[in-house]
Amino acid sequence: MENSRPCKTPMSTTIKLGKDENGNEVDKKLFRSMIGSLLYLTASRPDMMFSVCLCARFQSCPKDTHLIAVKCIFRYVAYTPLFGLFYSKDSLFNFHAHSDADYGGCRIDRRSTSGI
Image (tube, rainbow, N blue to C red):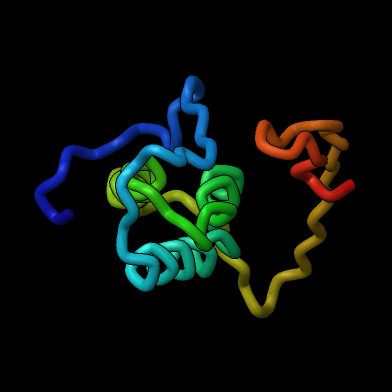
């Protein structure tokens, strides 16, 4: 993917990932390895947390559409190498965040995707 076209966002706002029961299966080991690498990056890259977690839901039976979405996230990482958080060992860092519930956010089983 070194010569692939860069992507300006980790995932399109119009993408609707689902089970895709008619799609072609991809190598589960490769897909899980890619998701694991991206999950490792989310500690310092919260801008792609939603996209990675959305793709991680399909690790049990990944299809072509899921692999395409993951490759788009990798293209985004290549496009934005200087984005992210830097945690200095010596600084006093106070982080405040807010999360809101999304009742019925998952299109498959209508459960909350934020866990709150």
